Length: 287
Image 1: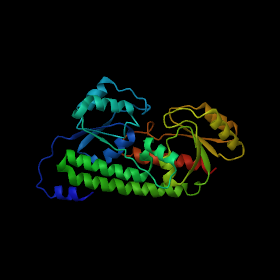
Image 2 (image 1 turned 180 degrees about the vertical axis):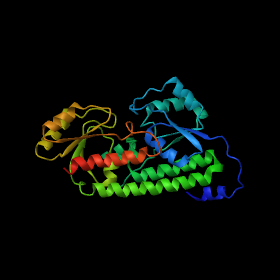
Image 3 (image 1 turned 45 degrees about the vertical axis):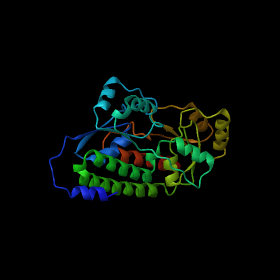
Image 4 (image 1 turned 30 degrees about the vertical axis):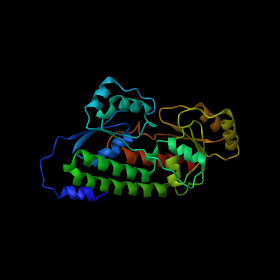
């Protein structure tokens, strides 16, 4: 990861080219790119504040912004299918870096493997975020070789801070790992898996399709006997099914914000997003 930056840094210094103009799809990606690019470029995000990443409609002005960018750094078509259509329409004229990769865990059953193929919320796993920073650094160096040493230093600093946050969150959640809960949207498995939490159900799948009547009934029965401590909503969404579990005995937890749509944008957004999730889980599960 570091050999190319070191070689490029040894080249004679020349004046910096025009600042990079990077476009991202969602706030967490923008946050990570900002940490690496520093002051050598601007980083815009296409998603409007409080907008749903899955069903967003690109405006003509945003399409023009995208066309004028040096590169698009985005999650994948699983996260933003509307953006994939724009990329396909532009053919080879749009430089873009998709960050999602297939990640098959040999210790999981087939259902979990299938879910892993389609779940794009992988930035909620700090190990995956470290890989994202690596890919971002590589792409920025490709676009701007003169800034290689700066990008390498910024990426190293971002990784160090991310690992600190990971340790803080692990400490916060160490006492609630065995407490069962339900989420209204199935987008947290990367976070749950990494920090060893106990999610026992969801009220809608990754595509926002509501759980079956049988599933909700089973979860309600589980809540009645104390088998579900909390049910967590999601920012910008409402769930009548969550009320069913609350009436059955579950505690209503915070509305979670996995895409940072309600967080102030900037380099610190990713850190804030992850810590907010940890605080929400800890507060409800530890009561």
